[in-house]
Amino acid sequence: MAAYDPENIFAKILMGEIPSHKLYEDDDTFAFLDIMPRTEGHALVITKEPAADLFGITPEGLGKLMAVVQALAPKIKKAVGADGVLIQQFNGAAAGQTVFHLHVHIVPIKEGVPVKPHAGDMADPDDLKATAEKIRAVLAA
Ligand code: AMP
Image 1 (cartoon, rainbow, N blue to C red):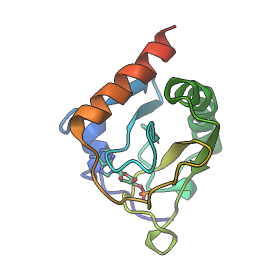
Image 2 (spheres, rainbow, N blue to C red; image 1 turned 90 degrees about the vertical axis):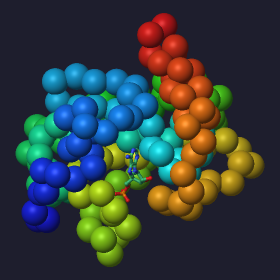
Image 3 (tube, rainbow, N blue to C red; image 1 turned 180 degrees about the horizontal axis):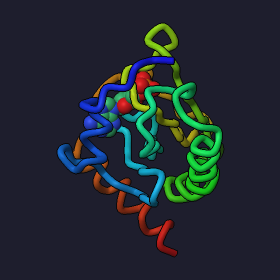
Image 4 (cartoon, rainbow, N blue to C red; image 1 turned 90 degrees about the horizontal axis):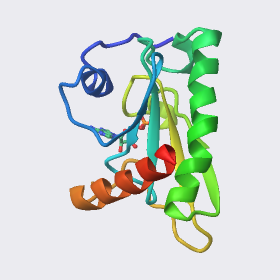
């Protein structure tokens, strides 16, 4: 199990020290747009429990996190007009993890539209803002 750094970037987002395009929050989880999206609508759901990866959280906490992923993914898919949803979760640098605060990727997929590389280019902030607004509208409906 990896050590948890309370100063990691997602902890700072949770504490409001770094801005994010917030989509959803409850007592246990927080969801926002990935700033280097693989596709339009690429979102991250993070736990508020201080866990570096999948192996640092209680089964109950993991269940709450995945319940939010399950609830949000179809709504994000609808908001961006996608055809499917890729759910990804990386554990350890060797597996591609770059932020050591447990999170699950929701990556909406459109038929025929290429998926960009993981943690590649930063998106235009205006595009992220517009996408977040589209998703929030579906979540509020
Ligand atoms: P992982 O490699 O699974 O740890 O994924 C970390 C993800 O966090 C990558 O997809 C990054 O693009 C994303 N990311 C890094 N910093 C931020 C940030 N400040 N706001 C939103 N997403 C971020």
